Image (cartoon, rainbow, N blue to C red; front, side, top):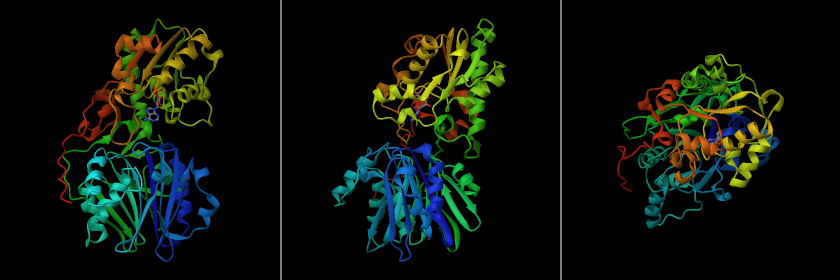
Length: 466
Ligand code: AMP
């Protein structure tokens, strides 16, 4: 998963700094690397990028001195291509025929390898292992076509998730795949136009969200304003990622017209209804307390508490300097990460039944550790794990880094066996229907493949005729 942002101003402005700040707001979408590219006075593209968080990878002071008309930025969380330095974005290309361009990409192209082999057969030399580079090659393999034409023809050949922002010729060009897997929004402050993965980036920049970029839309932003085009491709239906609402996006973002915060609160409410029904109104629980695993479970836990009337406490405190443990590269570090990150308060928990709300269970590492901590270290009477999404039983091929099926605990175990494995007294998941209702978009517009295995299959993509 990654975060992207672009900025365009008709007159020179400190846009690299804007992009830096925007990336800072999008940091939750990727913590491995960050980069910014901008168009220099002479039309050439300059790029700074490196491993680490935004403030380590980039020099804010340098960014604040840059004056330009367009800039793009990227925070990376490797899903395709691994963490090698050559995969850090923006990717740039300098050509004699088409000038220079830069691209930032959020999403994943599952058939990138097949397309890459075909292009290599025609002489293309790839420099990275990222699927994003494929897009640059598809553009360059359309000799004689103007850039925009070549871009829309290239996108016609892509099947999968892509939210993209390009720099080219002092223009900013944004595109979202026809299925709308990953979010992409348009915003404005004065005469500066922005595109970003999430609207929370606009809040920091003092910009106003204008609208979502539509699935299948290309927007060209230049001196003459914003022009909208369509990717020559008709998709049968949309596939907005449901997991963005469950976990990935920031709660203060609005994605495809839906407040992530409200969606999460609704998930918690729905969970409370089915959970209290199963626990017989929770009457036999000892001084029950609802808590959320911070930060991802907190909002659903509030919804749970409001709906059930069971008090909420922030009984588990999160070390605010630790990142997302899931992103740690090895299982051992992931396990230590849970302890480094979460500290339950014994005095609040001892002798009580704890309803612990988390957004999702993937490998199960977090739930097992948390249940142990609550029971063994804090003396909880019971641990009731309530998950505000359905079981994650299938890998994502469209940009969320879920592990392969064999590592997904819900693919191997279910029901009573899973409850025992996690070491909890009860285990509740949200159903898919409840999730869809909580988000509020029709099921036919959501991708729920990680829950039900219904991938966007043979959609009506045009065959490659390159
Ligand atoms: P696990 O410990 O493997 O069960 O992971 C579950 C926790 O990781 C949940 O609390 C989520 O907040 C978080 N999580 C779920 N999916 C992802 C993901 N793709 N990337 C990063 N974190 C995730």
